[in-house]
Image 1 (spheres, rainbow, N blue to C red):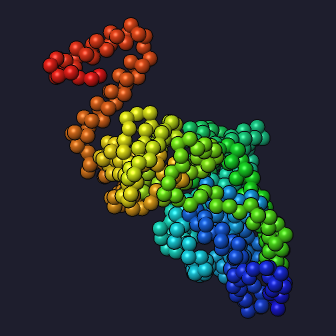
Image 2 (cartoon, rainbow, N blue to C red; image 1 turned 90 degrees about the vertical axis):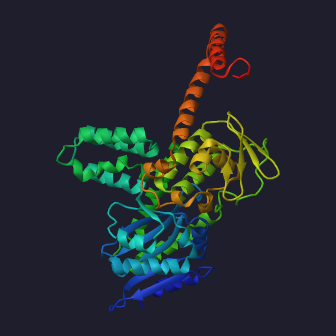
Image 3 (spheres, helix red, strand yellow; image 1 turned 120 degrees about the horizontal axis):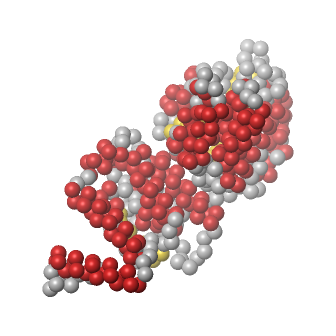
Length: 456
């Protein structure tokens, strides 16, 4: 039979995997779904972000490889992040739907998938959206990079221009800040002939939603990430993409997986489960762990909140990342101080804080996000009101406008002025400080009266 080699190989597997095959009229392998017990366990732990890579063989059959992605995934080894292999009978809507339904049947954690990363040539997006209705489908940074590289070679540019573009692309992918992406976009607009520029889809560089899924990585982590995916794509192409026989290609790939299963030994959850007790104030946290925790919070914000809510909360998180904060726990509430006035956080759901941002918008503020970061937790859907949940508000003005008031406008104006005055007083000479303080003293007394002391 056509599956003799596959059967013999799978007998050697110590734990029985999932293997569903469909044979065609010529007894050749027509469709396949494969997942080992280890793969199933990895996906159950890291289901939030699913990376889909496709490999074609000379017969026109396509191998779908599902990999887990995101800041929580700390797996070493080629293909260690692979959690599913599938070959649909046909690469159309019906074939893809059948393949995804089998995947969902054997992986209950599919409901927790928040983001799916695909390549630019993936055309069956409606089918993907139908099978994963709560997930956001985005282009992956890796596939965009490969797309640009291919286009640079196809355009037959002059060697110096091609070299500059490839170097800039590599540098930008390893540090995908908004400024670097804008510089690369401008460089493409300058170096590529206008008639050929539309082929590059350079507007992808300005889609911040795409790069939020990649930007949390440092330059070194980005380089390691791209190198790992490059090796993964090469291995898949070497075993499956070069042989017309699906059976021989998959047998060689499975044998490679068995011989290179060292990734299992380095499998770890990356983050400890949520804890009801925060770490003690003096306990040191490694920068790596803090970075992972904050990245997880960022992902949970993007996954749970609507776009405008995530925009506001990410601004609060940016303050947390750049500041020093003190955390003291009480019997029912947690005291958070971020080099400013102390505010009280109510950690029980729905979490609340005494600061004006939380009181006005009912969104997780910098103090709540600091508490989540300290406890190594992420945002949960029941922590914010219904109008801020994903899919409810279409723009920032829709929600903020409904909560805006003259009092809020005045409060924010005064807060900004107070901050500016405070900065000026902190950085002036003693003589200048006394003069300015005297001016403020006179102003306060003239407004409120000398009989009621006003503390400046």
